[in-house]
Image (cartoon, rainbow, N blue to C red; front, side, top):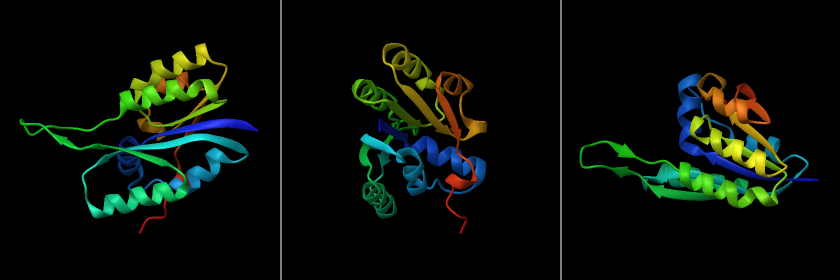
Length: 160
């Protein structure tokens, strides 16, 4: 049985799925697909906390599925712009788990992760699966993945 470590860029998934499909990502279906026949080393969802009840309920659903949820506060700068990303945190965690995993699963379309995938596939004998919305996933990230799995209908919650 192969071991897998899963890393989800929640903000990226939320916005790309909403933009392309006007629906939500089905985390439970994804979990079943990504973990089928595999030993889970770690599974982490990286999110931004704004402290609202709806968001906290969503985070509890992720925990119930099996994800560790890591939160960062949503920051609004003095000039009115905002910031809230996990790129460095995800990168550090992937590097920490790569030596103990046969497969790294990254759910994101962010091309900033391309050098990370290149690094871990050259240093470790492992596979890198990337799940992302095809039209909104950086070509460089798709190129660095061992396998690219497009987020399509089966990964979407039914529209309400």
